[in-house]
Length: 340
Image (cartoon, rainbow, N blue to C red; front, side, top):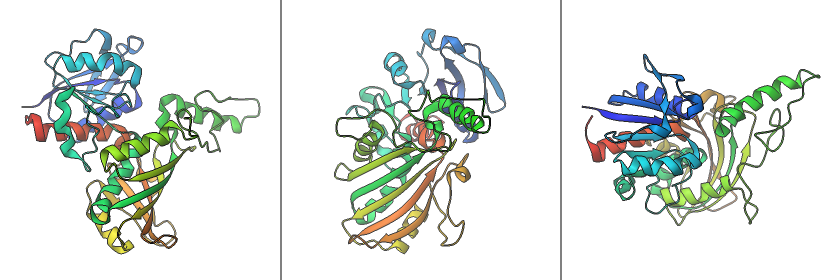
């Protein structure tokens, strides 16, 4: 016996990836509905060997459906998630809308699977920000061993984190560099992204940080430990898919780099590729399409008493969004619903 599953936002990058991953991981689906806005009504999407036509999100009745994976942004989620939840359908939401709600669990299954048990307060579970999701998978096993005091992280985030418009803008601007008669001014991003890096993701806040940076702080505290101090600099780079992060960690106890490497090798969801030679590390391009979060460049930080540096890379459309949402659904099924 399987589940009746809804994908809201099925025509977008994340929605399509959700369908791919549900099929790849053989999630027990008895029936599936793919929803989109009216302007995308009837668009065909793939689910395994099936082709499905999208239905109208605005007119859909969620009654009798078990799980809905939402990839429709905060504004639409604000309208439709309560409707689905009230109808008895558990919403797993990829937007930022509910992440900081104390009555909504924020879940990364490798880190805090037990948190899904709190879904019943609102019938909603939140998926974290893409940059946070991959980082906390690496932080948690190290925190369990040596207690993290402080994290300094710099991110190198691909344009797919800004959706299809971001990917299209990078593509068109890259082509225009080689065509002197073509000019593609920035629309999705604040400055030209082709052959450039932009230290600005989301809106600026009063303290000078961006909301993307604030999200990493707030979400790490909620998912891992509220005592962890974290500071982030989030940067958009001209890469289509795959986020990278340079992470500096200060622990309460000394943790040798070799022991850290062994801990990370054994941790769920991680793959360590760490050879001290040319090419002995993973780059964003190499991680695309993979489930794992890759860890490289593990080394002691001699400038502080108990410090480590590492390099963390993941497919942001997968672990940063669609994969994590499906893993939440799997965890929910195993711990609570127990059907498939």
